[in-house]
Image (cartoon, rainbow, N blue to C red):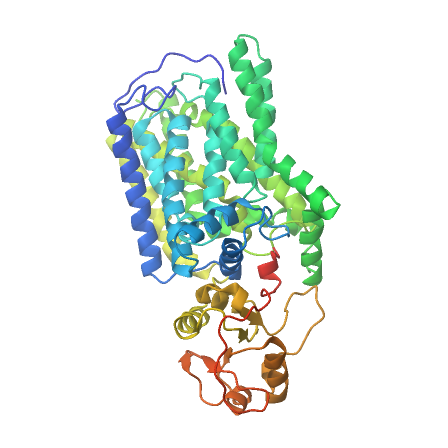
Length: 550
């Protein structure tokens, strides 16, 4: 990291100096590589959508609803909860420019996934200093399952991890040098501002980045200008967490209010039956369970390299190029990723970590692992003998076969496409005039998919809260009398709920049905059908997820 290094060298595979992206390779070649990476990522994203993936969890829809609310009434803190603001600022601003619809939200997610792939490629170039190795690593990093899914989900995990990787890579000296310019660290620090105001996982990364930048600034041999840039980068990297902590003190009277909120939500979910050790191992176990092929690939590569080294020690020709030197630049990013996972594990012990799909939070480490596998495999093939290439090919085939056979049997959390809820929300958006209040049945957090598809959160009234911190309330859709009272209380012109006798007894035949869900015109208090009012001013919708629960 920021140390004197030998002059850049070129090899058969296109190894180039990394002092600047265009220094050793032409701008045209860089543009072609970026185009290839982004087009490949776009193709992967299109395939994921074609296979039916739409959302990781109900959080995807909650974020869309909150961004739609921000687009209607912008404010500095979009949610007033523990959720960080940058994703809502970005999506809300684009909603105001385009349209506050679920389709626009998904298009934004698609574009951010493609931009994230470009950031990962730049980071790979900085780490490897080798064009082909970086290209292979970036292509793999854009295609493994969790990267593929998060490239189209309306959550900020992939852009956040890509920004974090970009920042960490800005401090790395590649195998052939030269040391990175101090000004690059400033770009990395700015990336961390966006990352740390999007998710909490990059906060330990920002702390490590700041420490490494300050250490580099204190080293002898640095000019004053370089020292000033590194010191400034350290301060900028911590600006996001510092600003959020200060805001929580001002807005809530408690600097760490967000931690208390997350802990209270997890506590309200009920006691967990896992012990401290299982919690400490939860994140590494999730990485291994969700992306076993990456770990198996690295292990297989290490085994082939070890056998090649033993053969070379016996006096035979070396069948593989030495890979240890090529792996050294991953030491600093790897150490920071381990620090991040350790911090997440400690937070989980204290009930301060995400409540589901823990592998989302480890995406920085998974991206780094994918880069290393693609990079080292490319270098190994490039300089390997014919026999070693056969061994590498056999190892790769074995990894794929293991993945195909065992992946379906690994225990995983399910995704939440919420197809019927989205469909009835779209139908309501087409049939219900803007401003008409809609009472929405709340079975679980799936109602957020309906609200996101409706695109008008201010018109929607969830019939109850299912926030575990709130007292349990029976659904008003369970019987006609309760439904009539609740509809009258909010002045509902329409009802959205499951098609069942209690709703049909009050409202008659639905105007539209999608799966098990229906849309009805709400009857007046007397029970006879009435015209739907338009332009009323309903109060904002409220739910645990739409209030920013983890």
